[in-house]
Image (cartoon, rainbow, N blue to C red; front, side, top):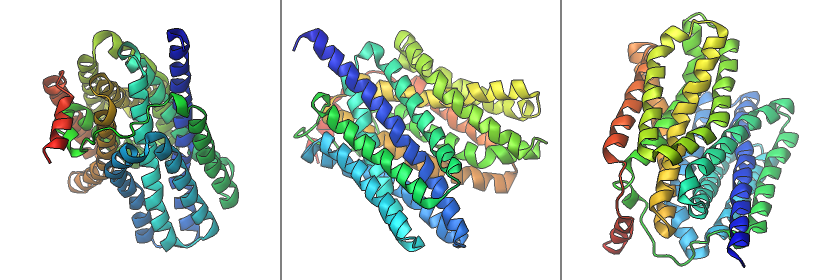
Length: 396
């Protein structure tokens, strides 16, 4: 195969993976909304609904430890397909047996499937993409991810939460993703038989990338939970803020490729620090902007959300710049784990702070989180040897 045809095949794989992760995100975005509504209609206690919802991120965190080992043993392509099939199995079990306690176990498996697919596809993209274009590619990837997250709840809403139709739609997304992976499997890095690199061994090597994933996890979950209430306290209707959340997500979709392109041109560290500081400024401005005119508020949310999400885009590109093979797979898993922990712990901590200090704790907590990220990125985002992960593995 000539170099040009090889490059063309790699780019087809890159675009296919980005499209597939967007389709996968449709199922990921739609499932929690659907299950929450169906459980509520069944009259299930709020405590059971909460436990059920918590099982998904627990499965996601567990995948960070299981998937790198499984991919190194069986191959990333098989694990990618198996993750899709596991997600389909979890969906089918919930569709066929409407028992809330069974759904708790199914959601744990569903979280494991989601984490598995994300870990391998991020590693695929990072290894396939040339360094000088990695920021743009991950910008496209994160845009597809956000678009899928937005479409999932919309689709189940349009289906009026009728469970057979919704489960069928979301299950079809898993099948389509598995089929897509098989179609391009020969062009995908498999990571089979590589020396194992411990997931926790990545922590001291990529602190800024991990903190970026955790910070955006906290931002994302806290915004969904608390931004409408923050607006209501400041005299803005809940419906108005609901549209604002959609605008915030549109910024995530449209602005990630430009952020990635800038990081390719200017470097990862300055763009990471810049996005974090802009998010800090946005948190400080939120109490004043929230009562402003509609166009100004929506423009603010459009840019603010994109800056917060941009830290993750740059973080993904940065680990691809430095690591390959098993090390890359472990770093991808560590970022998935950090995002899950940040989403659960960050939003919970912000809720506790709001109970103690009032609604203003919401933007102030985000200011502190992203200020810490800016400091860590400025101090630690530098080249270091990827051999350290392998050394950590061999020393155990």
